[in-house]
Length: 263
Length: 256
Ligand SMILES: Nc1ncnc2c1ncn2[C@@H]1O[C@H](COP(=O)(O)OP(=O)(O)OP(=O)(O)O)[C@@H](O)[C@H]1O
Ligand SMILES: [Mg+2]
Image (cartoon, rainbow over all chains, first blue to last red):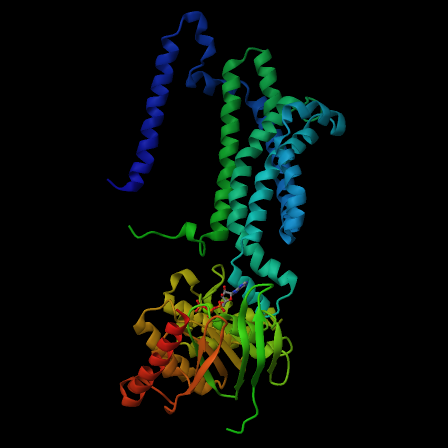
């Protein structure tokens, strides 16, 4: 059997087994406990019943995730460039960057609400904070890992500092940048969701998926809660998918990670 | 030869920081058109000597003049070929070759014409659109040489450019290099570990000794240019290879 076919059939089979096990578990439960585990059918039905609120929440969370993600990309690129200039700058700033990453968002959220207000703004800041670290660390590493001989080549031809950065260091750092970007793309929707859960608000736009999850659970709409989780997963896949696509566009014709193997 | 010297080293001495003496009072004069091979035990400072001429590293003492100027001032006349091809993997062959011109600020149109010309010179005109990873080791090296030739240098510095290649490819590229030199008259400093290569290519072979790095002997190669594959079959060539090998062995055993 071709490898291609296996790559589709095997996950599909796993999925079928998983769903069967799900139904088996559900129907082996006591009648009065069954509400704890809605069936896939019930979850799909809840999409219909809560379509409007889910769609609006998904849109808001996407907005928060995108803005935080984009902000993290821009700021991390600038900071990585600065950090790449000298090891003294790196030594002085790294501990604080680590600290920034260690700050538990949940504890920080109430303060953040006071600073920037609840809702979208807080969600964006929290997403930004969560995405920032992997981006900065990977991009900086890329910028300082340039092949020594290539740097000498540029010096040999008396390249300016700007030429060295934009024609050599930045393109050489792209694979590292995309590694960071992939991690950040996984984190962005989760960050937006957590941000919304801890600092979301119904004011204005009506809140995102995190805020909606709080409402559903207070209304005991458990299938809708599962639907919210599913939407978040889809959002994560879309983010990662776009990044994987961009990474392919930027790297496939030259980077070894996309080398075609002859098999 | 009465030609005015192109490269003049006078008592050039080199130490890295407070480290040991790497080059001890090296004096060497190259006339335009010279092809000088540098050969000697590992660590005797051959690469260092090239880097000094290239202005990539300063001499600790002594004077070094290129065309009557410092290496810094003569930068435009110099090109360096590293042991590794050192191509930028994200650029096509043509863009890699055009890089030195791009760094000099030449227009894309001028760049394209020159790149095509030097790529033809190394017989890779048909691979202009390829990426480095699609090339063999020998082809990559030829691109690297084309890039070095793209600014029509007066002085070409080559640090074991064919060291990583198999013997057949190496001999081929040696012949090509000499053929190119018929069209572009540059002066070459060529570091190698291969006596046969040194004899085939150069009109002068400088044998260096180690600890500290210094010039041991210079041998003139009287074989006439153009040299071809047939040159390697001549008696004179074989005798020279034997002689240089003997000198090199004596230098190496003295160091051991
Ligand atoms: N950047 C550097 N800093 C300190 N020492 C160096 C540096 N580069 C070279 N050296 C030292 O200088 C000496 C000569 O090195 P060099 O690379 O010039 O030798 P080489 O003749 O080219 O050797 P090989 O044939 O192995 O390439 C060596 O002892 C080496 O350790
Ligand atoms: Mg060397």
